[in-house]
Amino acid sequence: MESRAKIFEELRRETEYFSSHTQAQYFAHASDYLDFVGPNRDWRDRDVLYDYRRKLEKRGIAQSHTNYIIRGPVGCLFRAHGLRLPIKLPKTKVSLIDLSARVSFTTDEIISLIKAALASGDKMWQNIMVFSTIYGLRASEIRAIRKEDVHPKKKTFVVHTVKGGLLREHLVPKEIQPYILNYDYAFPLSESAIYLIFHEIAKVAGIKRMPRKVYHAVRHGLASEMIYGVKIHDATVYQFLRWRAGGMLGIYATPHQPHIDEEIFKNHPFLKYWS
Image 1: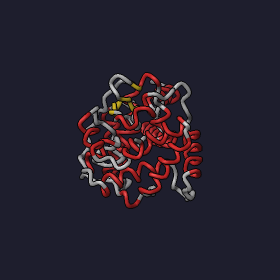
Image 2 (image 1 turned 45 degrees about the vertical axis):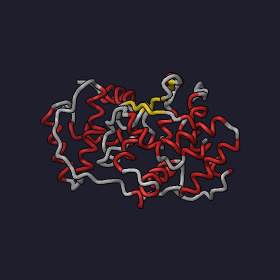
Image 3 (image 1 turned 60 degrees about the vertical axis):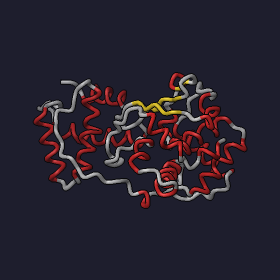
Image 4 (image 1 turned 90 degrees about the vertical axis):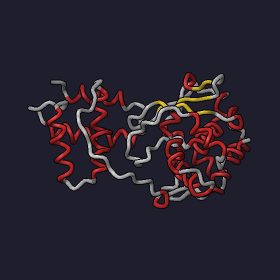
């Protein structure tokens, strides 16, 4: 039987590109599962996994969150060891993200952020804000991008999605090609560095700093404007932003679909401000 240290070593490799917050969640849930398994049973055993599912349900945890824990953190243990998850989970009703409950930047504030990045002439500022205001990339997704992920001939770049997702390849429209295809990715930033740079951009843009109104709030503002402002179908927006229609707790599983990007870029609310 493998030691917990060895199991977690594989889990750490599997979650390398996750945000620090998500990685901590995965390790916490994985620890809870291994504590439940104990020293005398095999964590890979199908019956043990079903017992754990029943334990979660007895706690009163919602089925959607139970599915997330098993498919996400616990499933990550199996994927890290090259194994399929040997369990069937009940389907849950599709529930869309309640954007009204999330802290977001307004449309005018996002435009101000873009103008501040452009006026600065700073290529790093522009690169970060293009990824944020056009694709809604998370800080962990930005920091994972390397030179080999950018394809100038194809006019695309690859996103290393988080939470056990597949690679996603996005189209790069002409308005923002200079800021993505011509950028030097030789010195990747840490997540904390991206947050600090973003606060500098927000300060220059004249945006008052507020609790929880941080870098990730740009993503929520982008989603809100696409769905409620320019009226792009919410399922299309969710796929573009690498969310499953079943909610944020789902595992991202949408492959590269150029027509989704093309549909988004026809009506993208912020693309014109970069041209």
